[in-house]
Structure formats: C-alpha cells, structure tokens
Length: 411
Image (tube, rainbow, N blue to C red; front, side):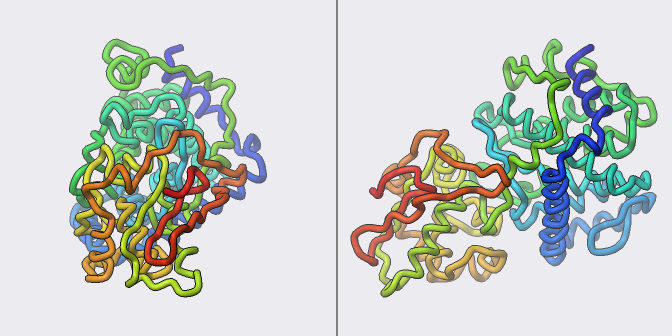
C-alpha cells in the first residue's frame, strides 16, 4: 500500500470504542469550547461579510451555519471554522518544530456530519481522527521553517476526519486525503509582516477544501496515490523524509493539546500570566513603567516577539494585536486581563497601550526578547499547560522584568 492508503486504512478502521473515557471527555470539551468561541465571533465584521457572501451563494442547505441558517457542507465548513478561528481562542498543540490548532477541524466535521445524519459517536470518532492525524504530522513533518503554513498538515487531517464522518470506504478516504493534501500547501506569509484578515481564514479555507475533497472522493474522483512519498510529493518538495506507522496509532492525541487561559497566541500565555501577577503587587502603577523586558523561548520570539516573522510594535488591527507579544503584555499590564475586549479597535489604538507598547524599544529587540533554548516548556497530561516559577520581578515597580514559564533568569 502507498502511504496515503495506509493512513486511510487507519482512518477507516478507527472506532469509538478505541477512545478512552478521558479522551472522549476532552473531545466533548473541545467541541463545546469551539462552539462558544464561534458564537463570540458572530458580530465580527469579517464574519458578517462572509455570512452575507455565503447566503448570496446559496447551497443545498444540508449543513447548519452557526448562528442560524444553512448552506452546503463545504461552505458551512468555511464559515463555521472562520467563526471559531476569529477570536484566536482555539486550542493548540505544541510539536517540536510546529504549532497547530486541531480544534480548527471541528467546524468541518460538524458540517459534514450533519449532512449525512451522523451520530454523536460518529462525530466524536471523526474529531479524534482529526486530532491524531493533525498532531502526528505536526510532530514529524513540520513546515514553518520551510516557509509554509501550519495549515499544510491540516489539509490531511480535515479530509481524513470528514471522510470518516461521511463513512467513506478506505479507497475513497485515501482519495479524499490525497486530493486535499496535494491542493492545499499554504504559504507562511499568511502570518508574517503586516497581518490581514487571512490570518484567521487560512484554516477555514483548508477546511472548506478538505470537505470538498471528501465530497469529490465520495462520487469517485481519485487523487494522487503517492501524495506523500511520490515524485514531487510532500516529502520531496516540502518536508523531507519522515515515517509514521499508522497501524500503531491510537485516538488519544486530544490529551496532548492545550486550551488557552488568555485570549492570546499560545506562546504568549505564560508571559501574560506574569504581567497580570505584576499588576497585583502593592504599589504597582502602569503609568510609572519605564520599560518592559521579557525573556522568552525561541519560537515565541520568532512568531510573536519581533523575530523572523516581522515587526510586532506597530499594531493597527486585531490580527496584528493577537500576534504581538509586546501588545499583549502591554495591554495585560494596563487592563489586568487579555480577553476579546482587549482587541476592540478602540482599545488597540488607545493612547495608553500605544505609549506602553513603544516603551518596548524596537531597536533593542534582542535585549527585550532574549531567546531561550527549545524543549523547556512543560505540558501536563490533562492538556492544560503547567506553569512554574512564572514571575521573576526585580528592581522596583518602575521597570518590569520577567521570564516566561520558568524558562530563564531575570534580565
């Protein structure tokens, strides 16, 4: 069998009884969490525009749109994932060279499952499949350093999950995964430089296309059978060699994922914890802060700290704010929390937060964000991040110094 056929055999053979009670509980939590954050984004301007477009395009009304109405499964997948993605409050998985958000697949599974009258157990099993495929490919086949987006691995996961909930046979499942994986290799420019609405819509696009790939496969359309190992396939063109023995995989990867405490990019969570702890100290006054210095780990520096993915000090939009460690720490020091209200347009341009943001002197980025070695972040088995020795305050309340998640010493 080819590698995609081996993956399809795993997907087709996955059964609800194989999922532990603990994993079932966590999958249910992820579904409820996804619906909650989706409802929280119903009034977001980009989603209102997409809703209007979706309604104007029509569809077969087989799948419910969150918030009311219906459309075709692939269009519903795009809109529903867009809702759950907009606040940037989805779950996360931290692989050695990649970060992904497996809950992004849930909107597609819900849409496709409804269209075929899937049972609750069918839904939970398909979501478990999505988590397993997404996390395992992220473990062994990272793409960010090659200039590709973390949605690349998701193209395989969402097609696998939708094929599962639609009860496609192994051959059609392989075709669905192959079509989606071949067609959806997104560029990392999505999350670099001046960020656009597309940052929150890149995975909805993959979810839509992965769902459509499964629909195509369901009517007999075939895909490249050597999408992984073939000439000009994924391994040769993007990832390099990797191996997964799908016959040995389980359905427990949801237990390795994290639900965010703060409405912020996952690598910022412990820095925000530290900032909020500082605000509770007697005598703290945000208007007395002269400078903010943060010690963090390499991937946080690269993605949200002004490293390889660009400037994080000139913040104009919600998309830029929730991927800027300087902004998130500044607003945490001012407001004592980082929740959706901290990304309102009027809050982002507020004089106080913009002034504090500029006290992170942009020309000294290497001092402000001193990268630390990888492999020091700790994650509990329950899927909740364990943080130790977060606060490392020194030198009085007019300067703020802290290390992220016990990863280093005060500057």
